[in-house]
Image (cartoon, rainbow, N blue to C red; front, top):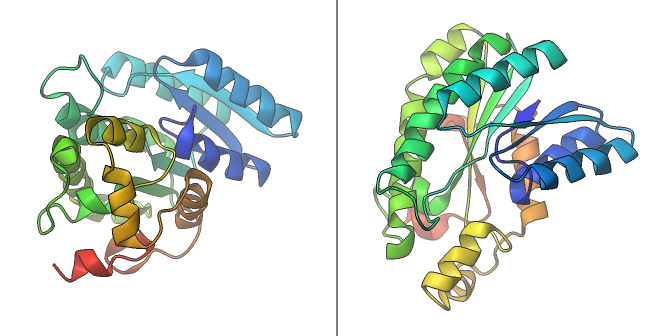
Length: 240
């Protein structure tokens, strides 16, 4: 199984849950090789089988090399978790969020499709702020990410009929802001107090480990109605 953006945070914890359950796992990183290799070593110490493969998801050549490595190492994929996202980093082009969160998601899935098979499962990880952006406003600092994540979700949902023909499952996991993630940290820097305000409004926020467990469950449990698994209370989003 493969989790994109899995050298840290939600991706790393999701990978760890599967590795410790006996799955052979692929850790994907963009530029933090040392951190990815450290995670490989930690999992191997526990008897797990893991490899780290570097790839910028917006680079077609990188993605092609990753697909080739996975094919030669594992033969194929039972589970693909599309966890990597971004858009709040400094120094990136104005269209980077849309390029990564929409275009690269579709292109990456397409590149990995030959590695998937009947009964494989694809999981797309998003936030309530992105999933409900068409009906619920979000923090201005997060808006480019929210719009691009929702665009990516919509583009992937358009592929569901094709995936179902191949017997491949697809599910979206949507959660609130997650304490301890890089997104939460960047939002807090840009808008001090934003995460605390969201936590107060929501009652509680999941931490990285808790949310990763929900992502892992989404990869093995029956596909929910409308292909969407909501994590935590969404009543304030649904009432808008």
